[in-house]
Length: 172
Image (tube, rainbow, N blue to C red; front, side, top):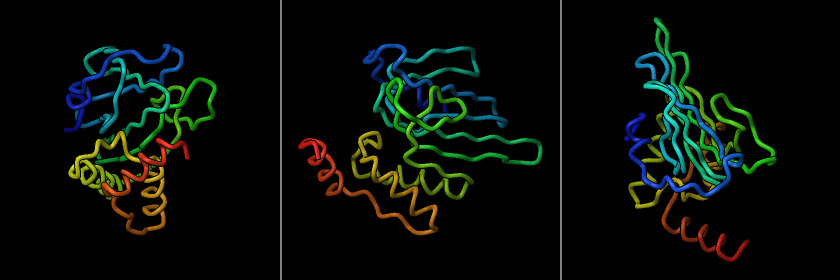
């Protein structure tokens, strides 16, 4: 699922953090001009501004993927995908358009071929039964680094995921 319909179809709207601790992501959808959408993520609240704009709210530590695309009369001018970790109030972060206050960038790609490749990798994670929200942040950093270097990233496997969950459980 992609687009605004996909993002609004997600459950889980219970508020887990004070308003000031939530990361806000403004989504815009102007057909064939500007299209921003969440590929994955668990927002805790949504605010509809008008029929083309809305704001999603993510608690600190939440991981989400933001896709931004824009075009003009000559074709596509922007294709970008960012996988971010929402930050707590006062925590250092990177600033990004439409994301307030910003986020910890786990992965950032520009250009449709790389965006498409990351979307395929997200699909592959889902195909093995893992929600991309629950993937190790280190995996997204690995994918970013490998794609930046022009190399093929390692796939995320159930074995890697279990190791990540165990490491997180013991606090390592």
